[in-house]
Image 1 (cartoon, rainbow, N blue to C red):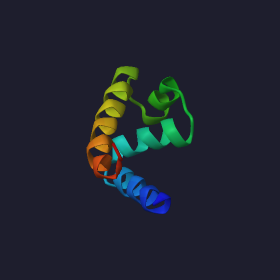
Image 2: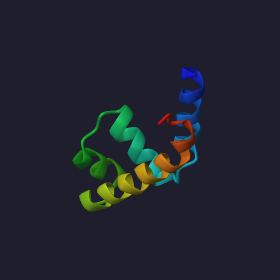
Image 3: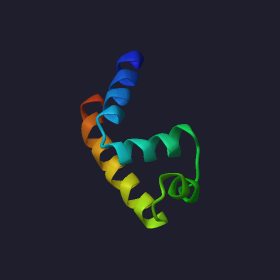
Image 4: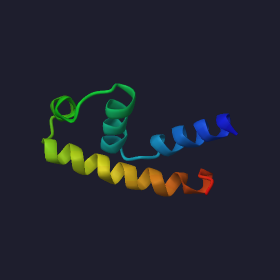
Length: 69
C-alpha cells in the first residue's frame, strides 16, 4: 500500500504542468521558502502562491482515490 501510494504521488507530481511541478519540488522536497522559489523561478511572490495553490488543488484531485476516509 505504501509503495503504491508513493508511486501515485510521484505520478501525480510528474503530471503537473512544468511550473507547478517545479514549485512543488522546490517547496516540499528542497524546503525552499516562497521568496527563494520566486527568485529561482524568476516570478513574483504572488505568482508562487498562485502556482502552488493550483498545484495543491490538482494534486488533491488526482490523489483523492488513494485517500482513505
